[in-house]
View 1 (cartoon, one colour):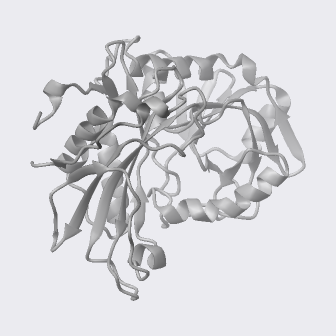
View 2 (tube, rainbow, N blue to C red):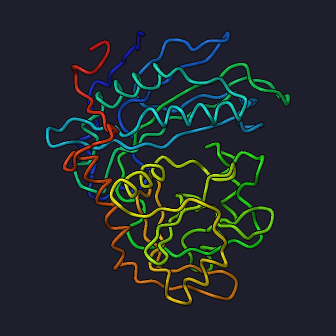
View 3 (tube, one colour):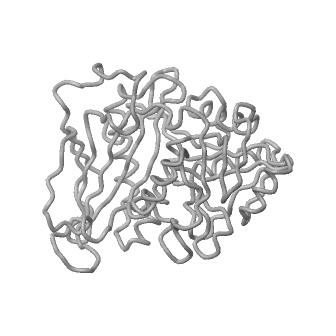
Length: 357
């Protein structure tokens, strides 16, 4: 597979203060771009980062055919980029594409294009633990047509952005009782832009009350716990780790899946099932609930110090979360290769690993 590469004359990486990064605001020198036209993907191009020019009738703007992924790259002690579970991200993006009536991205384009881009911009990977190079693959419709039908043309791109920790402190959540993120039969499992747009207003209301994020409940009974907009949820009750099952309305988080596997491989008891908000609140009141934390690509592991539901609040000592702290250390250690990767999840990107090096 040919990938055309047009490099910048001079990198901007030396101008970046990696100790003071606001999430998602700084972008690297290059980006990958490939168009889907005439029923097939065209030749990928890696070129200097710049603005796009779009037709005002762009179908994605009007009808919402837009999907994305979120990944991270870190570096090992040799300075080489480390990627994590790339195959799972390709699979999930293509699941999103099928649900949104979009073409599946070629695995070869996604994986090899990512390797080439990451290696080219590896100087942008922050060296500090907890920081990373955030990877944003995305696809959107490009038909110039005002009509309700699937687009015939699309654009797939990958952007890179150096980031620090998404949450710098334990968070406060409010269980949502009115608004719905996703429901059964909808697009809750797809990483589509509209899911996040629908979450913004309820999240803004919660933030006005002093909370960091909304904890979504099911859209039918407002009885079962789903997720937070930025992460899947875990609860520790009587020493057992509980997490909601993915039922079609909850994103199948790759960080979530990784955490479940690591917990089970290391002797923790994990139960994946429907979890009611009443069960959580009762456990919080009687003291059997000892930890609440989220797991996601951007957040990695975020400890929760308060959960509000109706007129009741649970307060926890998030500084004393042994299980959440353990899984966070596992993620960081596996990604920087200080902990053995017994599952074969990490990939080191070197010049020798590139197809057309």
